[in-house]
Each structure stands twice: as structure tokens, then as C-alpha cells.
Image 1 (cartoon, one colour):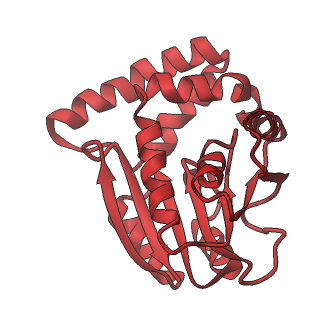
Image 2 (cartoon, rainbow, N blue to C red; image 1 turned 60 degrees about the vertical axis):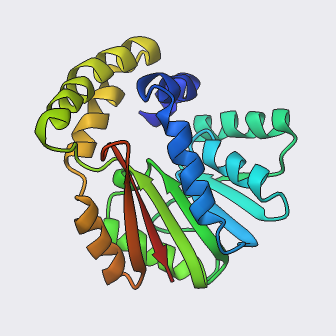
Length: 219
């Protein structure tokens, strides 16, 4: 599914979020770099947007982007080459990362965590490869907010987004999956609890009226 939508992925991210995803990513990058990490893992990197932002902001750091969809990674490598940025993009499984213990000072995940098959197992694996005192930053879509704004958002997210995404990408299934996966995702408080159970000290902030959320977990 992710391989199918790779060619139109960046366009649809900008279009369907009205450009807000760039602001959300910039905030995630700022939080990830607060401690001056030397080695950074961008997991579920997709076409590499966040990994490339990290490298631009911290050119001295080693940045690695990992994803399981090869077509996404091929686009990420082309973008890095065009920008003249050295980022290592490689295939990998979030539940069995090919890195030694305590290898990274910071780990970022933008809109990929909800796709992992086992959240506690993924968090344990992230804790394993994160160095003591390191930081995990998860940018994700929580379940839609309630009240009036939530009703409008649910209408857009459940009806308009799947239609537009399907027409542009050619994969209606992928953009039907998106709102379904968001509705099933833990609330911000529930995700905080999961991260704390994995050994992180956690805080989070809601963005754009709760459309997105950033969780920061310090090891």
C-alpha cells in the first residue's frame, strides 16, 4: 500500500494538510535537536522529509532514515542527492531494528508509529537503540478532536480526504486506511502511558486544535 502511493506521497501530504504538515515537522525537528544529538534515527522515514530537515538543521550529525517500503526510500535518496545532503536511507523493520544497543542520541517518527503492528514491542525496541539520556519524538495524528471542530474535521478526514487522496494517488484503499488507522490510534494520554511503561519520561503537545500531536520521550 505504501509503495503504491510513494510517487504522490509528498504532494498529497502538502495538499491534504493545507501545508500544515511542514510546520508540524519543523516543530518535531526542533524538539529532536534540543540536546544536540550526534546520531539520529528517523524511523518510518517514508520519502525522507523529516530526515532531510534534520540534516539541514544539524549538518554535523549522522542521520539515518529507515523504512520498510523500498519505493519510498528510492524517492528519499533522490531528494537527498538533489539537495546535496548525506543521509543514509535503508530498509528496516521497526520491531527488529538492525542497530546495536544505545546507538542513537535521538529518534524521530513522523506519521508512522500508528502503522506499527505492536506498539509496546516497538517502544521497547526504540528504547533499546536509544542511548541513555537520548530523546524519542513521535509526531502523529491522534483520534479526531470532539465538539464542533471535531465534527467538521471528521467529515473532512472521513469523506473528503479519502476521495481526493484516492483520485490523486490512484490508491483509494490507502486513503481509506488513513482515517481508519487514526480513529483506532491511542489518545494522547494513552500513548503517553505506553511510552512511560517503556521507560520514557514523557510530555506532549497538541498542534492545530488537536489535529496532530507531538510526544517527547526522554530516556
